[in-house]
Structure formats: C-alpha cells, structure tokens
Amino acid sequence: MSHQPERIEKDCLNCGAMVQGRYCQVCGQENIVTKQNFWGLTKHFVYDIFHFDGKFFDTLRYLIFRPGFVPKEYVKGKRNSYLDPIRMYLFTSALFFLIFFAITKPIIGDGSGNRHTMNDEERFEYASDLNGRWKSGEKDSSLPVQIGYLLDSTYKLTLYKDTAASTDADTSYLIRLKDQLYRMEVEKDRSPDSISIHSKSTFLEQVLNKKWKAYKAKYKNDDRELIRHVIDSFMHRLPYILFVSLPFFALLLKLLYLRRKQFYYSDHAVFTLYHYIFSFILLLVYFLFDRLGDWTHSKIIGLISGLILLSGGVYLLISMKKFYGQSHIKTFFKFFLLNSLGLFLVGFLMIIFVLLSVFQL
Image (tube, rainbow, N blue to C red; front, side, top):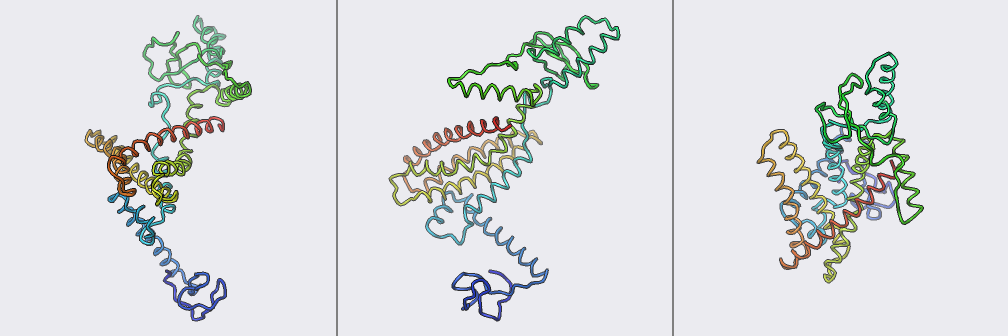
C-alpha cells in the first residue's frame, strides 16, 4: 500500500469505475493522489526497498533454519508472508553471479602465468630479431636453427618465465623477448594446423576441421588464449545452465514422487526454486570463507569451507523429508536417485553449453 493520500474524487483513474474504498474493485488500482513532491517520491522509494528487504530476509530466515518449511507453506496457499519464489530466485541469482564473476577468473595451465604458447606475432617478432642478428654478423650456429623452429608451424614453442633447465622438451633456448628473459622450449606439435578430425559424419568432420583451422588463425596459434576464451565464454553461460536445469530438476522430483498425487508439477517447481535460492546463498557463504582461508592460510577456516559445502546435501535431504513427508528410508533412497540423475543432467547440459561456447567463439 502506498503512503500517498487518498483522492477526494471516487472515479478510478485507470478504468473509470466508481471506487468504494481505497482500491478500485474492478481493476485493483489504488485511488491515490498522483502528484507528489520529491520528498514524497523518496519516502515511497525507501519504503518499497525496505518492504522488499523485510520480506526477503523473513523468507530467508525460514529458508535457512527450517528446511522445507517455506515451499510447504507456499504450496498450502500461505503466500503473503513470503517472497514470491520467482522474484527471490531472480534477485539471489543476480546477486550470486555478480559476486561470482567479480571474484573468479579463468585459470589456465599452472595458474601462475609462468608459461604460455608463443603466438604467431611473438614467433615472427623473435624470428625477425634473430635474422637481423645473423645478418649483422653474429656467428651463433643456433640462430638459424631457432629461426627454422619459429617459422615451422609443426613445432610448438612454449615460453617459460622460469629459466631453469628443462628435460621434457626436444630442446630449449634462453631467449630475450620484449626485454624479458624466457626459456623457450621446442617440441613437435601434437595438434598442428593440419590436424584431421575424424567422424562417422562427413559433414560434421568437415565442420570441425574448418572450425579448428579458423580458431588457430583467429587466436594466432596461441593455445592459451584460445582456451581462456572458451572457459570465459562457458563461465558466462553458467546462469543459463542453472536456469535451464530448473524445469528438469522439478521433472525429476515429479517422477520420483509420481505416486504422490497431491503434488503437482508446479509444487515441485516451487520446491526447486527455493532449493536453488538456498544453494546460491550457501555458495556465497562458501566463497566468503574460501577467500578468508586464502588470506589467513588457516586450516580451520578451510575445514569450515568444506563443511559448508557438505551441508548443502544434508539440507536437501531434510527439505525433501519435511516437504514430501515420506519415511527416512524412502527419502534417502530418492535423495540418492535425485543427486545421481541431477549430476548426469548437469553434466549433459554442461557438455551442450561447452559446445555452444566453442562454436560461438
């Protein structure tokens, strides 16, 4: 309800019907004064924010400390006291992914940035430098050999910031590129541009080979950059994966509780929405403790982080028991099936979205 004063006139500004009371009995619009000063607008805005927050935190309190209670109350029809699951899902998921993308970055290789594959620009730049040194009269027999490796795309060249000797590569050189000292390892590329991808479908084989060559050209043979873009593209599709998985997760519950005729598909969807909401909140708490553990290097905080993740499974088990009201044995059996099928479902969706990420680079 608005805090604006009620209009003296009783004709509804929306539908024109005569209003009996504060609200129109035909369209439901509140019959209030439409003009308001800046202070009145500010008070209305603040009230709406705190009204939403109040409902949100009340719902969240019950959701966290009483597993299965909120969805059970909601499907019973007691909805005015709790925030709508769709609105709450949108709010919590937006908050979760906002924080998630802010604190996480794709980690490639050893995660330290110690190495990367030389791209075409780096190979050409260093080859030009070596060629200039050779023409200027520098008599180093390794220069033409290195130039040969640099210009031959069938060799993979990896730059290491750690200049210690290596035994894994075919050969290695200490080089200076852009005023930075590196160890350049040379090895035969196991996935050259001419790689042939075989498939039972000739059309699919042609598409995959064409895509592979296009990627190599687009990212200038920089495998690290290519993988980083694939992971980054996939990470930004995580919200879609979770959103798409919602109806399937509810469908799994419908199949598991098929004999419980009092539960409609929409009831399972409500349970799923509130469970996802709780999972978002739980993961935010986990990220908080995980970062705290990284800063403090405390084993106790690391242990707490692990227990927080494990509590998600315990919470789901208790929620299913409270919401569906079956015995402990039946609930545990269905809990096991739900998680097994859920993992398969999420894995399948992840494969699809990884392929989409690859094909849309």
